[in-house]
Image (cartoon, rainbow, N blue to C red; front, side, top):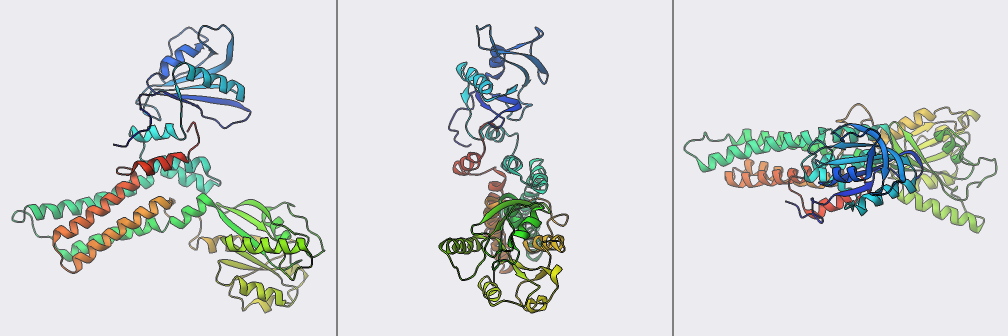
Length: 459
């Protein structure tokens, strides 16, 4: 069992809604004293006892005081049928910071303790209401920046990834139990076909590889993609930013070098969150400000996940274009051949570039949809939607699954060299332990604390 910093006997309280002014704000209380605290602080409009899973209207007052702090709604969720598995009450106040803090302070004054980050969800995990994969999905859902990210988080929250991990673990356990029975009772158990065992292990490896293949999607969905638009001055970088955003965000003029610093904006393309960066044009600088802008552009190129090199397709290739294309060679990116509304005089001169070229007009919008689609296909080659498991592992899952896969590989290699059965069983047990780390059945206190420290207070 995990060491818990505070006793689970403590009753915890926190404001469960974001700071600021809103229509409704919620104070959440969980623990053995939750219902007694509610009875002390909340006075229903009708003098009736507060029952499980009902919503009541009434006044919040400090014990012994006549003046009300707020007119509110309150509900009680009796253990074990609550999110945390404990008695939980919620007081739904008017959404002002002063009111919420007053109600929270009353709860603390009457014996509750201020909850730590993620402590409500942590208690749900420790009380067996959810596993660690589902707990991580809670924070993914809160932080989701696109509908796709939200959809994946909900799938994980409802147990889709947990079920897959459990099924894989069960398959390995079935093999392990069979082997260990043969080791312990060689005269009573039929000898295992070592070649068939190797094939079964390989099938399980393939399932883990499928999960590992979602790791890059997980990074993209959770962290987004930094996309830098680069090129020489006056080729249409700012116009392209505006076209991608669908609004006039950057200043566009005929004067080369208008953008002297980077501009960042968020955008959603086919369910993927992007941070699009409009950069200063790269050329031989003429002023100190221009030099600093170009230096910042080169820094953005270093840190970008994806690069759009934009060129003027109405002219022949410029030496500055060629130099920039060579400079970013090997990076993940595309070539946007702009200004095709002015004619395609130089379009063919870019055909030998190592980057895939998309012809566009940032001014008229021609080719912008095709450019967005091409960017997404380059980021996630199999497509962002509809062709995957619709779940995404995170970096913690990835590291542990790699370890499970390595254990299975060693077990399969032991089969191939006809190693003793107990050696194979040891490696299979190693894979099982790794999968138990993924689900949270066997994981260190340090990992638990690290995961829940990323939550907000009140969740």
